[in-house]
Length: 475
Image 1 (cartoon, rainbow, N blue to C red):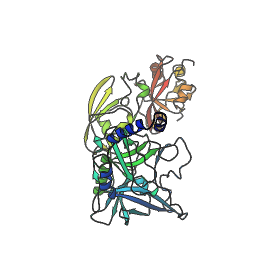
Image 2 (tube, rainbow, N blue to C red):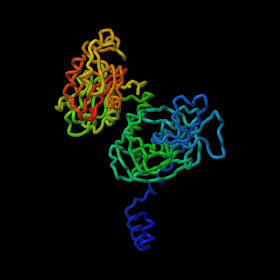
Image 3 (cartoon, rainbow, N blue to C red):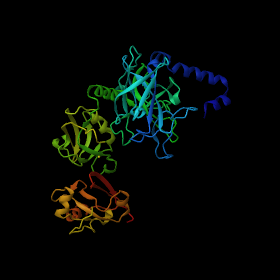
Image 4 (tube, helix red, strand yellow):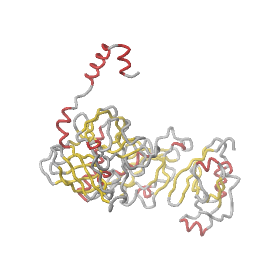
């Protein structure tokens, strides 16, 4: 029942009492605002037609009306009411905050990406030209520098200590309204959004109201320390709907240090491709769906040299449990290349610890038909597909070793089609048994019954992943 309905039914006395109790429990944010609002700036980035379209991410105002695309970064509005920009120029408005008295400012990469000119407006109404010192699209971090001294600064906190339920405060320029203050609580930590362009960031989720133009602004805790950078919202309309996401300040400051030292951000690389274990809990004899299933091991990588294999389940990385596969990339990415990492895995139902030397993720990366001699049609009928042997010449063209894999000749069943299998896919394993011939495939699948889920390791082009096919009972 809404608050005002309670008032109408029960009278003002109850309302007064409830309001008094609520007032006693709410924190006073005025001290934080008075001290740190002067260190929050308004950011304006102008982009001409010469740069627009070279990878610039769409603003909520220019994004297509796609209700499936709910996760959105929030620029300010292109231009301002009554002041239209030229067709060849686009203006994006955002926020930022000063991290050093000599003029270093932190904001989001998507606010200043491809900009020809960036200016910042301070709380004292000074407008200064800013230079983009460096940026990292993966973390969505940009470091700016203005020519000024003795500037007010924020205090940097520790995002690793953030807990659900804690109060949080945002200051920024939504819709160009400078120094707007909003508050809420921490809704979740370590939130991976599953967005392909930011697999190395685990966000802080809050219910702090933030909108277009808040991008790049600080998220404070009750001690007045910055714990995050406001970056994205989850919305069907482009406006705030109760779900906001911030980049942890530890991630951002790590990027800042690297940009200052070498001009770019490097990340650790384990050398594996992982996927969720959800569909394979029974196959892998797991007590629950925690962990990351290794679908592919990069030849020559640290994981390869340490002996990690397809089908292993990574349970923890340097002591941090892996609850879902998306937890692993941020942990590895923040690890210094060359460092040794302790990786706990589950293999054949047994846990073991493996020491892996972390490599460096390449900076430019973010991931068949065959005439066979023998066909395993009957053996795979339950799965709704047929497979064929691969001849020596085709195997060589595909880069496969002798006795490795069979090719899918036809997909006829609903379950296999729903799982995304296609003719020409290469099946390397069935229920963690390697198959190198149609006969081996027949042997590996002969015990599969209606209701069972078969776990296939499938390669298509340069991508390898596990696929689960549940045999229907009505086939």
